[in-house]
Length: 207
Image 1 (cartoon, rainbow, N blue to C red):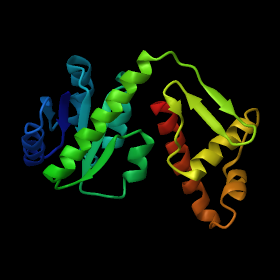
Image 2 (image 1 turned 60 degrees about the horizontal axis):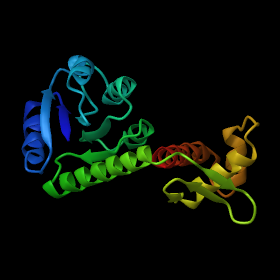
Image 3 (image 1 turned 120 degrees about the vertical axis):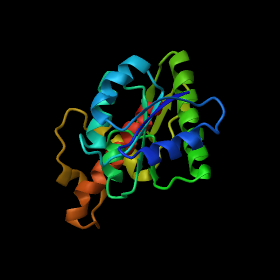
């Protein structure tokens, strides 16, 4: 697995590199403190995974992740940051993980295991002919080439089912909130919808 590290602090780069080099079949092929050259280097090196700080002086790490995924959407993004307030934005760009500094060896190993599992699942999916079915009679069941789709939350499944049954309609966030989160604070409904939408997109990509 080819990895590059992006952080504006060299000690942080060195720390991550030291941990990654202890894991079998992981190769650090690039390390950058200048975020502005990363997009070009991604095209040249074709990495499998990018460890990316968020608060960079030249460009926000979330925006840089978008540029990287425009080049190659199969590249995995792992954010490594000192701040926990970017988590929602990070997962909206399909980050594979969100690690808080300082990262422990145990957390790093768990992260790499997660990335490997996703890559293996993606490979299996690519090798199987894509046939899908959605059953809306009786129990709501979505079948994929690798079996029944398992939804991360009940709300994600309910929201996806509602989309299937109203596929020709324009659905406003407030309407979805009234249907699925009747008891919730109106101010929190938008966040809940976006969170479940992220989970739906992630699940669809997986299957």
